[in-house]
Image (cartoon, rainbow, N blue to C red; front, side, top):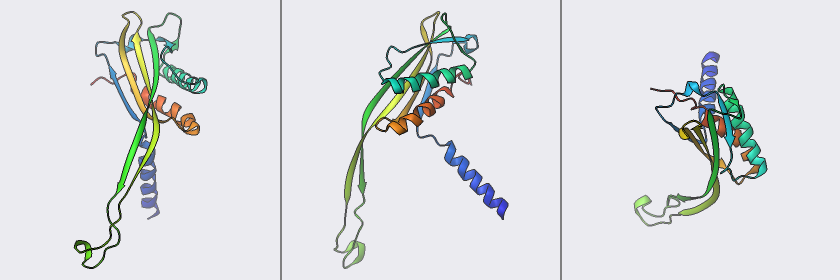
Length: 175
């Protein structure tokens, strides 16, 4: 019996940890030969973040690229362009009109209660473009969204997590 409880708890923990709060997608040029890329250089022309978040993004991106076997260099094979943006999100929630019922049950007369509420927040996204430096063409792009921009504590935790999720798809697995 203990064995079954352990297996159940382990599978529940695995299921919870494998769910990501982020939406991540990537695309790549099918003609690109990703095995030839050995060096990179990061370009931050469009990275409109405060200095703290910029350091978080660039440090984690460098760590992820190096874990993929790429090295930073002055004459790189890949130009890495990083962009960030955010958008305002409004969630509208409505509770169904269930509540107290009077005479006749749910089909008679009575009182129902309905409640509508909204919540506003900012959601951030990171975009990583890998550009072949010889052809100056985009060969891979990763996009991740779902960062809680309004909470410094959440950003501190989420930026490295989302960058790792984005870079999981590099190099692409051809089918």
